[in-house]
Length: 205
Image 1 (tube, one colour):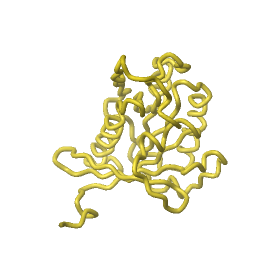
Image 2 (cartoon, rainbow, N blue to C red):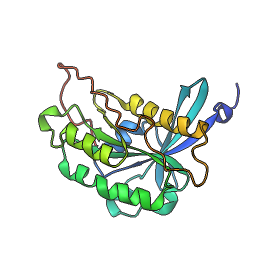
Image 3 (cartoon, rainbow, N blue to C red):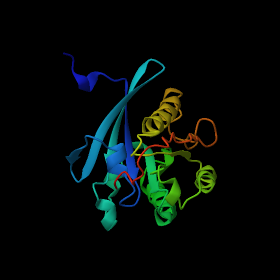
Image 4 (cartoon, one colour):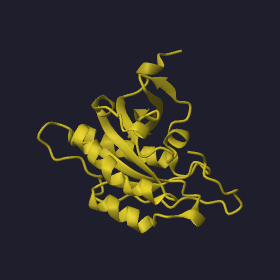
């Protein structure tokens, strides 16, 4: 069997940020491993015939203490800023997380705003249009996801990795170039697929 560590063409570091309890670990970081105070997992997709591997970093609860260090962001080319659609305060925190990200990460990083727990439509506290508008104003990709229904999780990663790949392959990450922006110049929106017979719950935290 070949060395799995060499079975990819590109390796991108993606960081997950957002308030505790929004579902970062349970939804985006399944089968994660612990290392140096963070949790990480990997995901591989194919883009233009190339194997693109993401190393996905989570804060492992450090955000509870606002103790995330600059080292966490170092080398990241993408980030998912996650909030809970049923908890407005987690959405309002997105601006603070975005500022921290831009203070510590590379200016060319690709960022996606993710509204998690989209299955909780009856508890929604953050309108999709409002979140989409915030993403558009800040040059972010945007998607709503659901851990309970496994809705749009793969799509979210595919979207951000495809965007990063497109920029890297066109050599837009070279010094002095403009900051990375969504390839379409706008917001990616994918409506969650909801099973009307599915049992409603939060999908954990």
